[in-house]
Length: 465
Image (cartoon, rainbow, N blue to C red; front, side):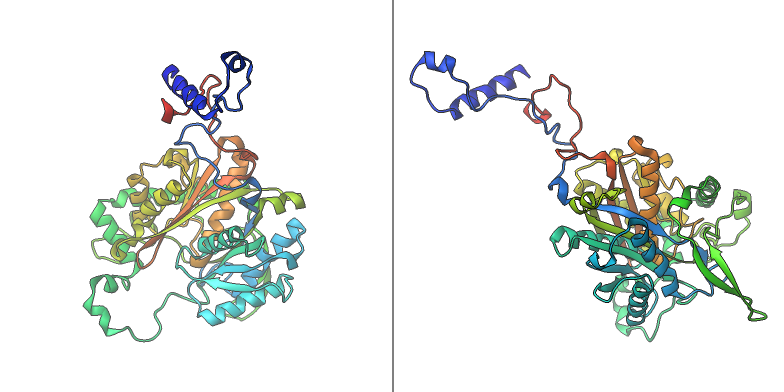
């Protein structure tokens, strides 16, 4: 350390202007001098933009998630799912809706032009004026997160200062299906063929190739239901769920009954490993993927309000989180479930962080096989992952899952306060991709820097030692 300081002082002497006499040198107060390195270690996370230019989240809400075709939203139109969460963003923040630069909605299964129209209609139902544009985005299961990332990127680029990233899926209205014929050329390329594999088959491929046992998968499902049930019972989800007034139609009589949906209806608190062990594999005769250790087919919506930090501060809005980085990656379509194991390190590295710096993970539980694999591959602490349950219990409405995860993550980070600074959201993506994003708790930053604290007697960073 002493040698490094001496080297720095010698360099500074060369940079100072030459002085005429030794006496003047003694009395001269140089403009350049050795000082404490405020940046901290080079491995420490540091801000790469001005404080006021941060893209922040000021509100994030979702509907309850309900079982497709037999749950609480089976008779609810898709636009009536999206409108309540869009409305909640402006009502709970008192934001003038005309200030929103764009609404981007992640959605997967519905025909593109029809869903785009439904999303535009939902914006009108929610109280947005005709001057606010709407568009949809489809990156399969990451569509909701992609919508949030797209809005964050647009704000960062200066296209607008305020935007909404949302997600919507009614798997009751639009079940998973291939429309039209398949190009015969697909038979000429294995990777293209694998893009058509049922997702459950890719789950079996992951389990087989990486040795994920049926016991591990069933235990992961039980843990998901247990944590989701505990979160529901303790009222944790009340901060993020917007009640939806809708109707239920009796399939036998056709009678309509008005209801309010405010609780996820797929959670099974009493699920046990022994019960799940009785279920037969769905996709392979001697396989391990069952209805019990797979994500639920669901209906739901979510929405996230983002803006520049300077705008949020000017408006006096609370800052729930800061959008830091996003990464989308490609993987083998035959084992598409491994996506998070590749996307998470990419996003974390882009944020200047290491995996150990992350306090919470929301990893979509498309299938227990891929969830367990990713957790083990990255050597993540199970106590940090899906602390309030995941898609096997709560549900997986494809286009809405990313927005749902953002709402769940930022509210949980707020509850944990100083014990939780960074969070990650990730999911696998059909046809072989993965996506991940890094978020920072909103009140954990300051105007100068986010470098780790250094000892008061450290004058230089590690790089100079």
